[in-house]
Image 1 (cartoon, one colour):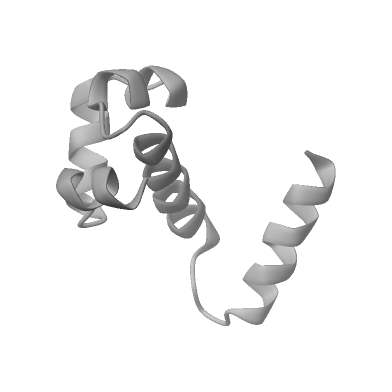
Image 2 (cartoon, rainbow, N blue to C red):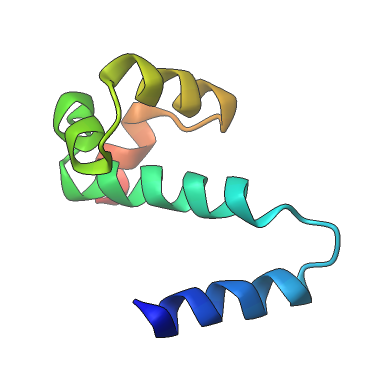
Length: 72
């Protein structure tokens, strides 16, 4: 886990001006949806957030459920 965090922070220093938290959050949501076959309830549970919060963040980051199912 420590190594992964170091890599994320290294990436943040390369992507000047980009906020790292939204990038990581978006990637985690996409991965959780892929892992659960697009099931939002299971993805939300995996992330430790409510389904409504997941849906809100999917909208915020323009993540479409259909896209996640086909890419999984």
